[in-house]
Amino acid sequence: MPIPPSRTELIDHLLRTRIAGHVATPRENNLDHYRRLAQGDRQYWLGVELGDRWTDEQDVLAVMAERCGVSDDLEHRVGQDTIDPELTVAALERAATLLRKAAEDGKRVLFATGHPGGLLDVHRTTAAALRAAGCEIVSIPGGLRADDGSVYQVADVAVYERGATLWHTHSPHPMAAILDGLRLQGRPQPDLVVADHGWAGCAAQRGIDAVGFADSNDPALFLAEAEGVLQVAVPLDDHVVDPRFYEPMTAYLLGAAGLL
Picture 1 (cartoon, rainbow, N blue to C red):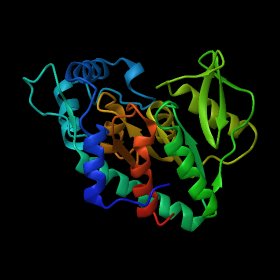
Picture 2 (picture 1 turned 180 degrees about the horizontal axis):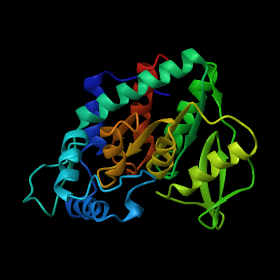
Picture 3 (picture 1 turned 180 degrees about the vertical axis):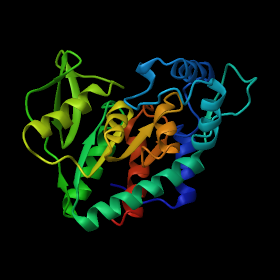
Picture 4 (picture 1 turned 135 degrees about the vertical axis):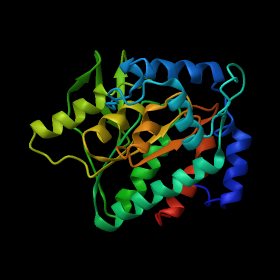
């Protein structure tokens, strides 16, 4: 784990590696996802129950401009879009407050990722730091199934496996399988979930405090944060070319939480 960078150093790093700033996700993909969410396509709700509160694509765009940093220009339909690194760092700092509190109180924390190719080490390293600080890292029940695949843990992080391969998934069903499995075993629900996409959305919708990492084309978690359902949505490109690029970000998060 590198030494935590300063705030300015982290912002420079986020821009240089395109975790934020001019990200790879194109504008047309962002707008397509905002429109599909507004049209009620539950695949884009990420486990959050949005009802009929976000049926205007422009309202979704306004929240994404405010909380993620995409362009608020309604005429900008194709090409480059952005994530504001200042918003990324501010969200990391809010997440750090939750992690610090979890460590102080010895809370039960569950980690999960639908982006094992990008974010697995972010979650694994954070889980290890919280375990060392006295938290219980939730061990999920064995034999869980969801979406025709298996749900299990790798290095304390719940993942979705299918065909002997860890899959990228935004589905909320794997998290639902975990939470239902814990209940069936008579075990308590997590106090805090640190995850991404549908894994975070499902937990938050069930009333569990949750931190969710989300890309600029995944508006549901930012809407959930705006409504107070999700505690923190961290805007970032969730699969850059080298997962090691996330290491300074993780160090900053853990340093701000007092876990290094």
